[in-house]
Length: 157
Image 1 (cartoon, rainbow, N blue to C red):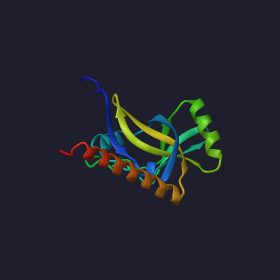
Image 2: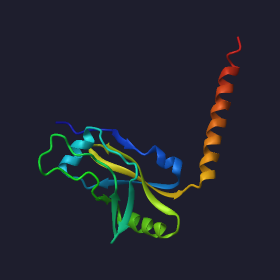
Image 3: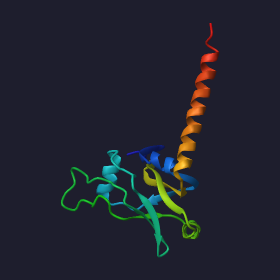
Image 4: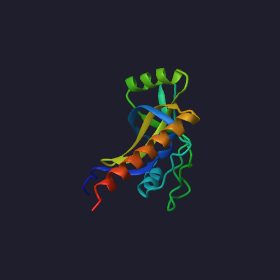
């Protein structure tokens, strides 16, 4: 059977880009059980409320919901278990140093398959204040209105 090629997104966390200033992103592998992989291949996962932590020199993905595999047996996985992330030692040490600074957190942005392997994109992020969110929404609306005005300007027949 030929190996998978390309990238297939399973879940994305769009709300994270709204709630956080994204400083840096990293791609990490995930240690999964067999039924978790089958559930992900069916396109079922939720990154809402998920976060990553670093403890004892290891990175973990926590509170990410991967539902039970429907055809699984009695040894099915638990839905919100703690999953180990596969990162380089240098990346883990760098992230651990940044997280100790106040206001930084690790947030999962997307969960996907890349060439057959399950990967997660995690971001080093700083939380936005309420006025920052309003400012970003206002800028998006202004840009959308400007684009709309530019597109209708050329259509004066």
